[in-house]
Length: 508
Image 1 (tube, rainbow, N blue to C red):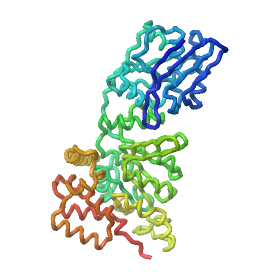
Image 2: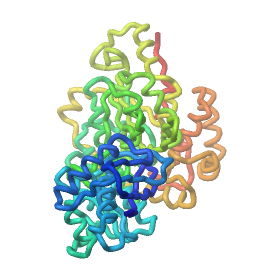
Image 3: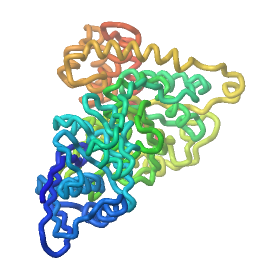
Image 4: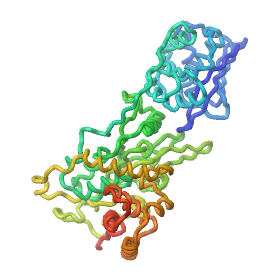
């Protein structure tokens, strides 16, 4: 007796179809699963046996061989429990209807309940590309999988219900398609709540409008964390395509089953400084996305930047340039998206009061030097905007009026986004921060006064080639916020003040 059903699996964000073949022959009772299964799949033998028997079906007491094809790709996770059980029921003719139009995925409990799995959105997309009309999966994953149009998502609660549906004895209504309504990241906080800090707020606006990275340097309690948490309130909402892209990443590591099946807001991730490089960038023996991929199309906030391990920070250099991270292992390479807005915060020195107008710094010159060396120059050079966040004075704390509302700032950011989208619609990039050399030559042309001004800045500040390009990108964003087609000297001048790494020196 032989039967074949279709399933799907994923490695990283790459999906592939899997044929689950069940062959039952006479012989001593045995149950073998072949086709490069991992430990979770090998343990499926006991789960499937108990689930079939406890669902009042007959389990064949013969020699059973289940093959997961293609045999040269490693299969991972318990999602093959349901397709293996369906294949056995089909082979023993306890399910009689043909199953060519169906795809299956789901974990089984010993009592036959279908439990949720990871990556249902990716699996549903692969099932659709495989020309399947129906995809049976756990009820808890149906809402997430329904983001994929063009395939019927059939939610099932247990093995008995699934078999009855496949045999035409029970009707199960397909999960309705989800109409996505993008949301803003957080309605409970507002940039107007931050007193003072006009320069830092302006830097946040530029970062949000052009997708630029930002470093804030200031004394403890100056408001760096408060500012960073409110960046998402002035960023445009995600589009439907972006919502699906972000949800895929969270689905792969099982972060969409806690009542939030669809990620509709821009992610905000703030890992602790004790995080490892694998936790930040991704990795492990079975590579998974790290914090930078979970921040895709959102904000990655690194508070107390100098407290992070040096190797962890240096691992950020390639993703900041490429917008993706590749994790290589002996047998495969996984690539995850990492197009995020980095917001970093740090104290100016070990005691935190270097340059403070209220408290005096007690650090020695040697301590200042060692502290600054904790963050490498190449990493700081990759951060577009550098801004000082000064401690508020007593009068500013008591008498300062409420600042500009996030809604008003978001309107200007949206207008700048629309300008960039129109300008870059025929290219692969979407924001000014992603523009390459060809884009800079085409869209960041300077007039003679602008060229002369920037030439003097290069001589005085010793700007590198990367810093020069970043100043052009920042200037382009500032001009877009002002609604100007060309970059003027005032735009270049404002951009230069946000490159403090080139300008700032420590008097030792």
